[in-house]
Length: 551
Image (cartoon, rainbow, N blue to C red; front, side, top):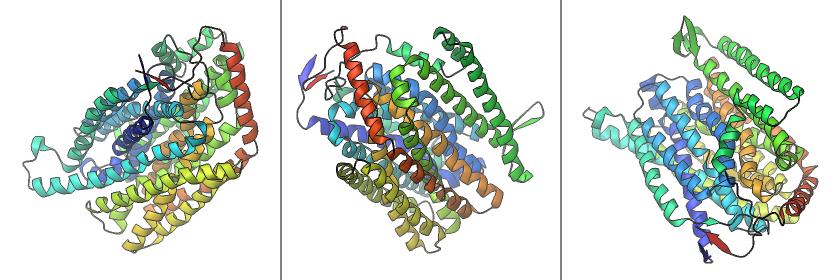
């Protein structure tokens, strides 16, 4: 069934997708404002806060991101979004029933799995609603959801905690819930209701309709998603190699990936345990006389992420020539991903501890979450909206304009953040936070638009998920944990944050490197599109064109 697309409808879809993104960031960032209460009630350390905020979420977000992106590329993107939103909202609400660090960490894993479905599907949808020239602006507007969500999490979370403590500070709270538990439930339930609106009002556009590309439908999308997931996890990854007819050297290479992962766990766990005093080593459980510390959990998670990504890279290289040439085998794509990884490292490290730092150093209370939230919504939303126009303007003026734009804004963010964490004045702290928050979102739209220009339409969702591996595993998975472990070891949270900000020059170097091969990368994508058209035309696939939408 098809219906003509009304002119305003694509902007409605953008609005809905932006709200979904906001819901995701509310559920993701709520830990920030609740951190002092989690430390008090659950006894978590700064490193464990980093694990809750970053690693427990990021690992499963990335592991499931690739297969769920494949599902979005082959199945209904709208249904993928709605089901994912329902699941992660449920897991957020269940976080409010947690009574221990382990229970809360498990719920956060569920949030990561659910959210992995969202942005690959949303970016793919937007690519079929808006022409190429507008995609930088559209992706930037979509990214406003990050700061609406992040700001709302601070404002709503802080307000619920304050109101709950006023109402039930002397006991008799419903179900014995604390303020932080009520906050998790309060932000999780609305997301489940919003998923119904998504299912009822958002239509599935025909794939590639604005690029005149044949719409290749995957006859078995769920099987493809499961196959992608299995290709990353042993022993199914080895069976996948066998099914692909991989030569013996590929098995040896996979074994090397496994050895590197094991070595990473041993060396990194030993090293981080050594820098902490006995009293600061957070022991989660003891099995057979062996202490399982949060450091061990952290590095097992990172090692698993490394091995999983290595398996996916290997399987993609062997099974999908287009994806390998344009994504895993592209040095331009790799450089942009590295830049995003280090940007995310610094920015997640700063954001994860903003309220902990403010409460610990400046004496701010939960009510300050409202102020921080309003600043985040206004400054972050404004910054990301302006960045869309500016990065598209920069691209029109110069072939490498988007990349240079990110270099400038990353430098501005770094300067403002240094002021924010060096001042002892609350007013200066708020002002510097506003400036930093204005610049912090300006990397996503330009870099995401750049990666989308490097692939053919059928790989948009996969390209987004592949790009996200760097910012999520390295940036989100390591940034907050790094700050936490340095803070636990040194007793100086400010020092830990300032060190994290210091990695931003690496991003600038990666962007300058990417600019050297960007034009060739875009030309390669165009050539691959022509090759794809030649291979699929006349093979029974539908030539896409015209403003048609399918339910």
